[in-house]
Image 1 (cartoon, rainbow, N blue to C red):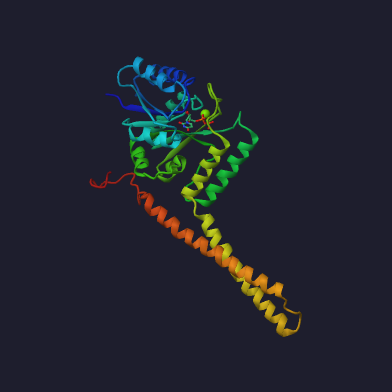
Image 2 (cartoon, rainbow, N blue to C red):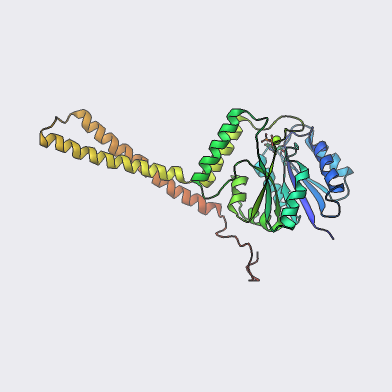
Length: 319
Ligand code: UDP
Ligand code: MG
């Protein structure tokens, strides 16, 4: 029996895309990948308000038995939730996550599979080489964001990396061990490690319909990535506050020298500056410190695994 490659496809109001997507996948399954792997589809309807679910049901009905599955959410829960649900219910030996709008070309799956099967990689992702069709502002924010998040966090995000990737079962199981609620999938993929190959491709415009991202949604996505993985802002608060307290004492010494050395008169405003520096700094530093404790509580609550084994010769530690 040949191995199974399962494609997880989050869909939110994609009625104009899902049929096109299915056709593209069929073409691949009957073409380049025929006899190499069996392709299964797992559509996750993320609470669409259009005819997406009906279209998915139609596709599942006409497709060969057991090759197309769908899950439909009770409301829009977000792409990250849809990806998690899809991964959780997946059973394939190779599992891919990809968009329904054909911006993630199914034809790339062939090279991705080659990387996993023949080159020994655990996962293979698509990296956009250009951002044609995207506004300059979005592009600028994206570049800045990767710069900041890579400096601030332990995980290394590849600039231009997309959510389109194919993984081996072992990596999917590792991703599923991370059961936190606020999911920043891109960071989680990076966090679990394993060897990832990046294949560059040119940005493709969506097949039909409109992007589902609003500015607010993107902002929330970006900040949840930072909050889930970065502690640097808290450290900054501690350092900044500490520096202010230090400056307060230095200023106090200066005032004493002024007063007793007879260089200048110490006025009320000087005392106010001293007090502001001292108490302002103390407040900020203590807030940062309290934040550090919160971050630690958050990390315990998340219950991420302490380590993930890629291989070993111990039978009992294999999973
Ligand atoms: N999506 C989703 N839930 C959402 C928003 C988007 O499942 O709340 C899906 C959407 O149907 C598509 C993928 O996530 O398959 C990427 O969305 P989109 O194409 O709108 O994003 P963009 O390509 O513009 O970044
Ligand atoms: Mg898209």
